[in-house]
Length: 280
Image (tube, rainbow, N blue to C red; front, side, top):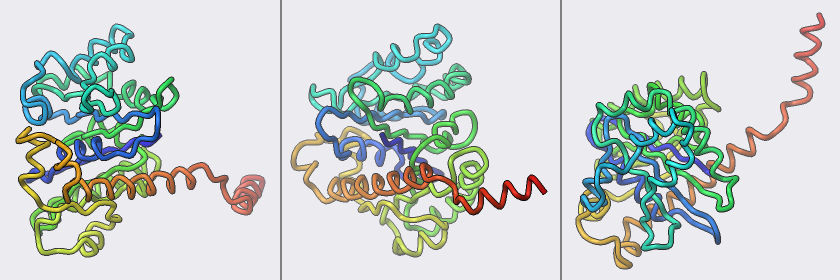
């Protein structure tokens, strides 16, 4: 199982659009699903954007706060999922909060939700997860969703303004992941190629590897961000989605590499020296 937390920032870099794109492009072997969870405490955009208002605001993340208090989180979670795959139930989305004032209801649900997402690989049908943390969700109470993720993908545009704004965010995430998570090597960048700086310079400036380079294509992005047109076969085969599929492959490689590192036993020599020091 892979859990990817997607993080945005100031200036609307495109976290939700990237999350939706990954959900649609994610490679799915037989009998596997992917779930996108829109978890930005500032409020979601999927209901009014990608879903075009076709689903009422009764659906979504805010239902999970009450469900947690009633001990029914798992049941409610699956009830709130909306199918993005024309009835196949392979690509699902949990819409986000309708408004920021709903966020306090989830104060005690973030930790159980993180545990639930991590356990989705052990059910009858295993799931991968893409968590859209938006601008504000990677820090604060909901940050547990980033701390437990295999990959934390920071979306940044290749403009001076966006790179400069991302510096403090990436630095803060690095500290949080090192001190309270599974390590800052979870960090990666998704670069939206809007500005003049190549991915290598963005990587050097922010001190994190680039796992995705996506074209700056407003019309293609609006198919997902605003429901402007259908995600039909032509769109799915277009250059924007092709870049997202390449990104999904790169993210999976990064996640698998980290899992191997985390599963590896500690250096026996280092353990011996540590034990000798304690005895001394």
